[in-house]
Amino acid sequence: MKNKQLWKNYLLLAVGLSILALGVAFSIKGALGTSPISSLPYVLSLMIPSLTVGNLTIMMHIVMILLQILLLRKDFEWMQLMQLPVAFFFGYLTDFWVWVTNGIAVSSYFGQWTACGIGILLVGIGVSFEVKAGVVVLAGEGLILALCKVLDVEFPKMKIINDVTLVSIAAVLSLIFLKGLYGVREGTIAAAVLVGAVAKQSRRIIDNFVKI
Image 1 (cartoon, rainbow, N blue to C red):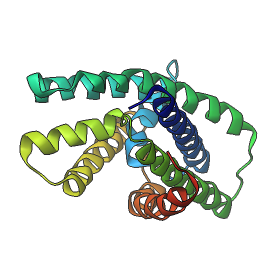
Image 2: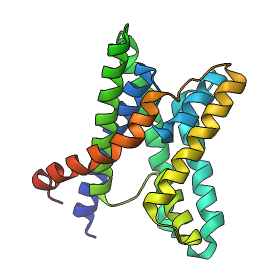
Image 3: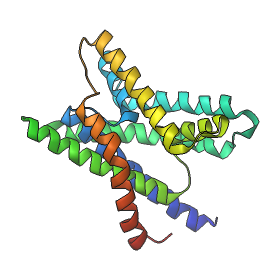
């Protein structure tokens, strides 16, 4: 891939990650549960106030990269270590957008669903930009791909297993340490069901307007 073309792809990835991080911030603002991939870092951030959701997202991604290396061993493509700077970029973006949206007031259940809906829409659009860029995936998707290769399981099925695992861990930790269900609610289910559909539809639009 030519250098000029590569820069275009990474610019597209950066735009997608920014939109995705803003979506996460809106889902946190809605307080109806985040998307499955963000549920664990969010719950941990409530348990450990000294660490932000962005910090914990970075840590989770590092663990996921290490798991990919352990699973794939000699088959691990070292180019995928680009997931590491992407993780830091995404984590810091998440904290930035959480700070930006901090002043938005949400005072009703309708308002919560509005914020949640905006979050789902933005996450879906962000994912479609990430896929369109085609340079490097987030560590969450990288781990799913590694598990698919090792266990010979189809991606959609493994993604469901991965999402359910993350949400289950987040829910258990929330119930034990926070004495309630935080970060995992009806909005989490909505995100799990709708983000893929939004990404699919927005990808069609992006393909028509973005040529790389």
